[in-house]
Image 1 (tube, rainbow, N blue to C red):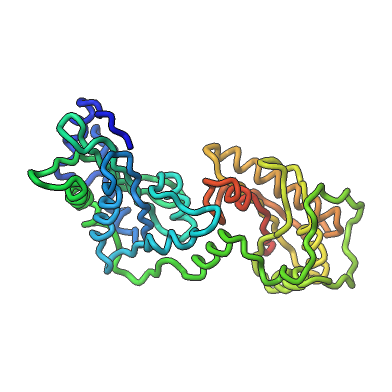
Image 2: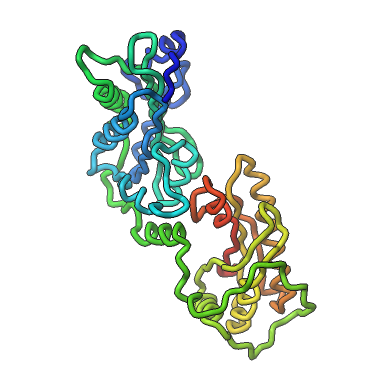
Length: 361
């Protein structure tokens, strides 16, 4: 717990945030943001459990519940926090008690939310020289553009418990936001299959088409094979090859399992999945594909894009070496788009570095 008194000047600076906020479209000197038009188009919300950096044990829980209870369910839907925790329960990706902004935005993208809501409670809860401070933020998923930002000093009334004062302050703080957010239209939120798939990825559950086939041992990629076309009569020999051939013929997207790179590089370490993909392509003559590479997102978006482009080129060239005609292949890098798992663990980052196959254009 943090028991250090916050600077008095900061308390004064943030104190003005307790006054009513008018509709805003740009950053104001006190840091408040309210983009009402964008909020009105935001229907599907992920509300991350607030972070607690205060000495009040239940402060963050009170702040989170106050915000969630203020959302009008006829205008916006909140992804249930217990369900969000259950997705990652008993996995290496189990969520912390409070969720940082970067993780909140990742989770919002994973569950298909329009925006992420996150915040903090910090400071002390005793006396004017150690005020509690509350912050609330709403940011667009993907673009990370702030739609709402506001801070307030928690001022407990006589006899009011600190967590009750936090709850009341969040109610007041979020009122301009809650009055504008959401759309009573018919847009559906949070596809259950997407949530189930996220749970499967978190558990690393084997795919049905892989359970009956032998797994390739980790190790260096097979030496390049000089070939320009696969045998026309090649037939799938494993369940995975058969399923991939079916998906390719049907124009479906697939994740290429059993492909590994050396960390955040384009050096191919394991290519068993590419070998299976080459056989599946031979069994689906005439199909063209686009090889897409993804990385775990970093602060360097340009670097992420360049790395993913190099990974896609490496995978495409390896497929050509394995006998797939060059005319059937295209490739592109997708950077840190569309993560499969949060990036806050090594396992999640490794899962997000991957190769996918999409129908060719």
